[in-house]
View 1 (cartoon, each protein chain N blue to C red):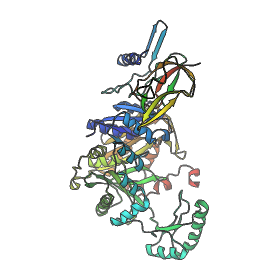
View 2 (cartoon, one colour):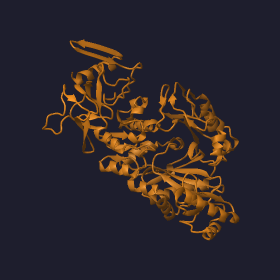
View 3 (cartoon, chains in turn red, cyan):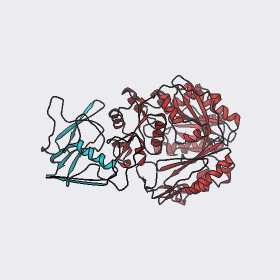
View 4 (cartoon, rainbow over the protein chains, first blue to last red):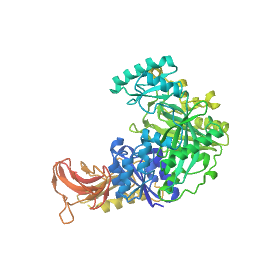
Length: 454
Length: 143
């Protein structure tokens, strides 16, 4: 086991890693930017070192400063948390070249999985279903029609060079295809100077279901079941839960096995998450693997009883995975709400500022992961998440009741938070009966007319 | 003035939860202030390098002092090499271009410049000591 590791992150995940270190008897060195100088969680680290100015680029993304900090504090490993440098293969490689272990997968696995084309190739090799598509550029309308008829309507025409939702056209039938193709091409040429288009089946009202993976250095890989993250807004997750209410036992087994197959094909080790889209007929399609610990990992920790961050550290230290797949059971239902310092009634505008009042929820079935406290100042330099509120109960119905209670106990002020939004979400009939999709929040919670027009 | 003596004084303040200590000795005047809230130290107590300063003035200051602060994390070296004399001594006059020390990180030795002018009154770190971003290295009396 390591005697000292550096935590290359901030906020709640830095605190999470510090806690895992303290549980394991490992000394944790925290880094901080000048903006985070007064954060109380730094006092829980064995040592803390300032690595740069407030902007992430000067500090938490400053690989040279972080490695320098690791050297002067004489650590044996770096835990990157999530975001920042967590999925940066160059950084992972730099650490290892400096004789400092990077707590995560190999740089090679990370870059393969970070490349969409390579990841899909690997999925095909591992016989993991992909969204049916054109497998490359589509030259003209005739070819587009042939492919669309083969993969089945509705389809989405997408620009290869695209982004920001531009150069995309949903097409629901043959007649609409040719005009949509021409229009997408024109927009792609205008926006990206590149009219290359490809085709994919359009998954309508998809559910987002992801599988937690753990692998050791000996090639043993297990899954720790799934999480459903369908409640999103602009591709940001708001609520996650396990088990997924949208899939049956057979789909669950197939999905989780597929994730393990893919991770093995990628020579993956450490913690990772394999994301799928699931349609209303419970067909699932591979999206991507996130080669890091994720924000919502506590959902899995609650249903399985395993400490994922401790496992990451132990695996990185060379320990074998002692978990057998057959022994990994999911018990009960767990739900997480991400609490952000944002104004849900004002287009989710971030609300930095001091948290003068903070009363925390608690009691049976409640877990709260937060670095914030009364007096903590939410700074404008980083993301706005201030807490993760989780519940775990024997049934989903009881979990809902406890979450409603916990949300009502949670007082934060004067900054605005998304607590009020979550309270409304947990009253939504479709969510209660387990029938939502990734468009649900935007359809039901457009906060201002301004938001709808975007 | 020795930095070790100041570090001991800070430790005395923390251990006894003092918020203000003022010492006059001849021409030397030292005033140390700590923030309003007592520092909560969870065992094991962080080393002085470790604890983020609880007060707004991380280094005990004399009036009107300027500080040369480290622009990077690394190891501080007071001289160009072990055989040479140090870059600066107390009493030296610096311009903004004056090289005051080296900070080494990942085997690269970076020359640190004063970036301001003044006369060196105190050297706040020791040779081969680890330094962090923004850490005060030298105190200067302004011109």
